[in-house]
Amino acid sequence: MNDSLSLPNGDWPELLPGWVWLCGAGPGDPGLLTLHAINALRQADVVIYDALVQEAILEWAPQAKHIYAGKRGGKPSAIQRDISLRLVDLAREGKRVLRLKGGDPFVFGRGGEEAQTLVQHNVPIRIIPGISAGIGGLAYAGIPVTHRDVNQSVTFVTGHDQSGETPSSLNWPAIAQGSQVLVIYMGMKHAEQITSELIKAGRGVEEPCAVVCSATTGDQKVLETTLGRMAADIAASGYEPPAILCVGRSVLMRQVLDWQGMMGGQAPRNLDPLGRGRPAEAS
Image (cartoon, rainbow, N blue to C red):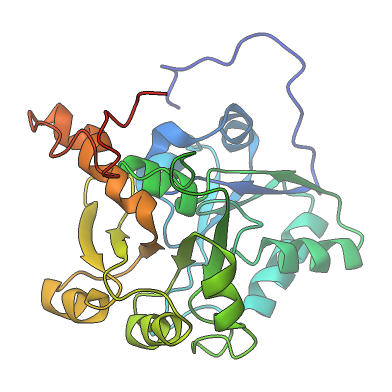
């Protein structure tokens, strides 16, 4: 077991036999785990983990059996109902079960469905939130989802539903007109349809956009583009999911807040990306 980080003395919760903890592992970087997540990893008998959970995170639980239950769009995946019932079976065997999910289990992560199944089968649960990619992943790209000079609202949207298609229930005109910044999960495959709907609803073709792939990992890539060019630029880039799409002027802040680029010696491209005629940090 990795002993380089010891939890401080305190009243840390105990993962008891027959319990299932649904835990967010964050967007990728193991350093974004919460202390509750570390505590859970060190106690679990079984860890059932998703596709986006990094191998380095599983190393915190060498004593546990690791069971892969990843679901990736367009690839053979476990059936969600089977995953949920597997959690029930393991708990009934008296195992200490940790369900480890990328990001936050309750943000487009099917955590609510799994928790509901467990409760229906009288399995006790605990929820451990995690950093969602739509916030943490964009932060690693130097894009704040809120900035007082840019937006007072942000909307999180999923790019596909259970069928793998863009959700038919989404009211794109309301979404386009109702929020200054849009953060779209799992939307890369349907970028052409999504951007078309947003433009049709009145968003400008030159509106700044970003595509952040494999956010917070060593494979992170960031594509800066505009709403009108996003689909074509994604196709030309060769970038692949997982990805977060961001639509809105907050993307411009990357020109001064690309902190990973600064670590590599790159200077900010623009200290006044919003065009206010003053440094962006001035009040």
